[in-house]
Length: 255
Image 1 (cartoon, rainbow, N blue to C red):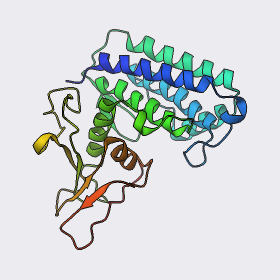
Image 2 (cartoon, rainbow, N blue to C red; image 1 turned 135 degrees about the vertical axis):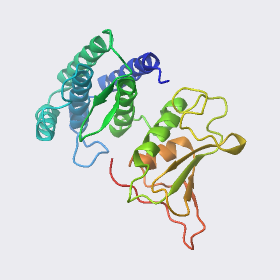
Image 3 (cartoon, rainbow, N blue to C red; image 1 turned 45 degrees about the horizontal axis):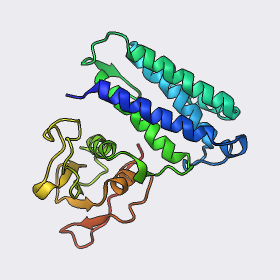
Image 4 (cartoon, rainbow, N blue to C red; image 1 turned 45 degrees about the vertical axis):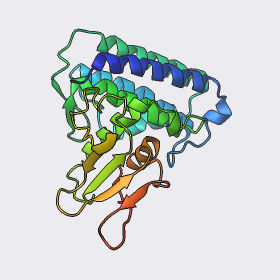
């Protein structure tokens, strides 16, 4: 079972880490480009604040956003605010989310997200944790994928490979992080049997993409795998093996 309380505790630590890092910026750096095309650092922070409110909406049974266009408009509206306002909004929206998450609730229920996606309510704290950690990296202020907690990286590999599972544009792919499961829990914080796909000799392995065909095997360190799966890195440093004449790193659709 997913431990949403553990994830809420991890989320609090990650948010405090982000707030401390952002507080060291100034307005000039805040307006500079992030690693996300077309977005300044202010855009990233505005998105994180509105995403906290969106997840609180879902937990309370409301639509995540009023509409896709409203979501984009809110980010554009808030992106140019000065640092003190951005920080206050991020703190306040996080506090609102934590207050909602502290209310008695059925965490096993299914909730509706965006674009027809559904999930267990218990997974929402981890989804928010993904937003905080990856967008902290996207800010380009000295926090890298290699700085992310190891357990988080393994769970994110599991989460993303499940997301691409069965996708018609992704060839059958086996993702391998050598030694990933040694001394750790499984991808969902269990004994390693809940979708983690533990391979031989302590390898962590996950299957994704189409079910038919000879799989391509992509291996590497967890930060490199997350970077590729999340569209943050081109896959440099990953190994690719296949019985096909030319082994190529699969091109992944945008998240």
